[in-house]
Image 1 (cartoon, one colour):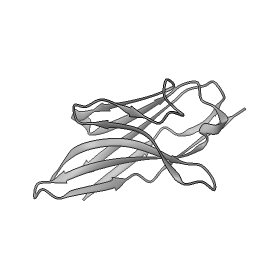
Image 2: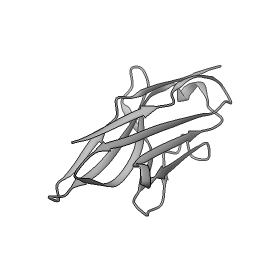
Image 3: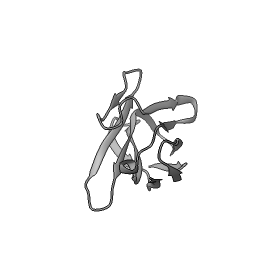
Image 4: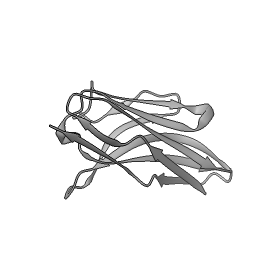
Amino acid sequence: QVQLAESGGGLVQAGGSLRLSCAASGSGFSIVDMGWHRQAPGKQRDFIALLPNGGSTYYADSVKGRFTISRDDAKNTVFLHMNNLKPEDTAVYYCYARCRSYSGELNLYWGQGTQVTVSS
């Protein structure tokens, strides 16, 4: 079993920056990829960013050029650096990790979510 622990959300003014972190813990797994989604009130959960092992980064058009995803593989941690935040970025941000067990099974895990609020 894999647990994801998120941190770094909060309240920020428009134009400000935040960094979210998400650390994966557990045993008997290897990470295939990690990424972020977000869910605004009354809306569906949307893809934000993805960073596969040794691969290129992928971003939603709405955050491209403002958000950067990175990983510290030694610590099984993924980060989301958010710059030039806008009120429409207000949402609960969820990290996820796609992991392969030693038996070869592929599973998707989600963090508990962290609130980001951007005031105008």
